[in-house]
Image (cartoon, rainbow, N blue to C red; front, side):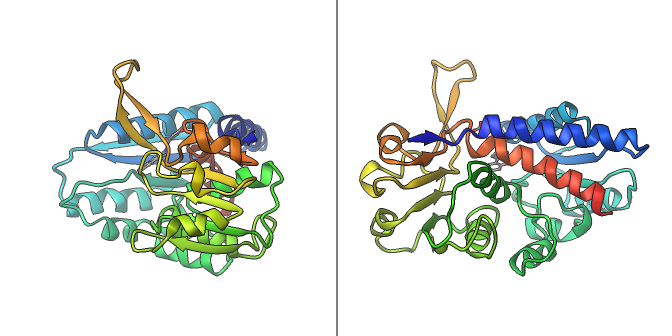
Length: 290
Ligand code: BQF
């Protein structure tokens, strides 16, 4: 069993991005500039946005955090989006999800200028991605692909089972892995809450990608010997012995599953850090494509 070390790989990526930024600056170009919109005070969202801003600083990007009250109207939020679209100093930006319930997420994501949509959530980017055109690929699936690439894992012709059909992880990763390409040509099955006998499918899979959000859902008897397991789950569970009062748990019963696998991602330190690194990568691309 080998651990796919997302933390280390993300750091390698950040070092490469930092070197690229230094080169850009030496050529007299501006450093990439990422903005993040955070609505409200959700604890997890604050943590995520905080690490995105910190990562920008690490690689030499400019960053701007736009914080808004959770009572903001959809119209007022759309005005903030319009300002970011018009701001020529900003290469790319994200709207941290989830948004408050009174705001229509779809309407907001549709308002983001696709050329600044470094989360890759706009239908234009999703469509281009699906058609193998140049596009921003959502950071989590992009991170999974990059991790497999850097560990030189050959998925060609392999049976891959994805658990979860979210627009942000499950659906795009299932598309990407079935496409032609270096990390591609897999035979992909996308499973979800209405799928029957998921465990029968996972047991036959060469690669299992779980993006479900149920701690320890994937048990040892659900994976075959030598399988590759990618854990995208991150659920906060209360834990008084931890300084923050919680710890994060993946979808995989790691202790019992890991010994059976050829490769496995840990939680924390697997896919999560790659997500952040690929957001930076997309921002660098946004500044280079404009
Ligand atoms: C780690 C996210 C659900 C909903 C909205 C490192 C992150 C997480 C875990 C992180 C996530 C999840 C992010 C670890 C960003 C990934 O060491 O395991 C980093 O910051 N993420 C987000 O911005 O919004 C989410 C999950």
